[in-house]
Structure formats: C-alpha cells, structure tokens
Image (cartoon, rainbow, N blue to C red; front, side, top):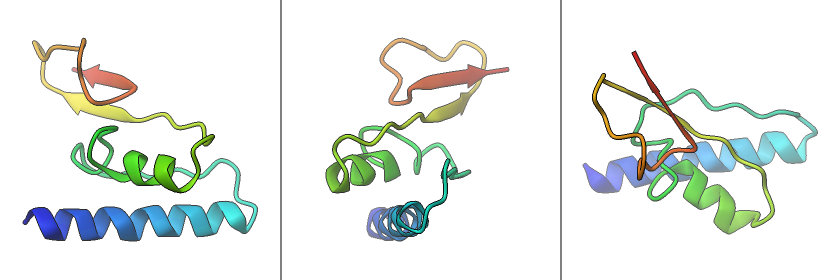
Length: 78
C-alpha cells in the first residue's frame, strides 16, 4: 500500500508541475490527507522538484486532533 501511495503522489506531483509549466496559476490539488502531508506526500515531491515553490496544504481532522505538529500548513477540524 505504501508503494501505491507514493506512486500516486509522484503522478499527482508530475501533473501539477506540468500544469504550472503550461501557465496555470494557481494549481490546486484536492486529495486525501495522506497525499497532502508536507512530510510524506505531494508537497514533499513538489519542494524537491522546485525548492522555491509556494505551497499550502490543508489537512482535515476530527475535533480534538492536535493542531501543533500536524504535517500540514493548516489543519481544518470540524
């Protein structure tokens, strides 16, 4: 499962980079929490490909989730 997740991350990152190169601004990815994690997902791959790229990742969580230390730029809890 981990290999499949990483493969999907790489594919999504590639499409985002291609769209950006084609002039799309902004480029938005709507995906699950695992794919948008700054430490493991698509943002990690995008930063490796284009270090100066401005990224915002939003994770969705349950009430009571710890916001500090979350692997997202923002954590939205309901």
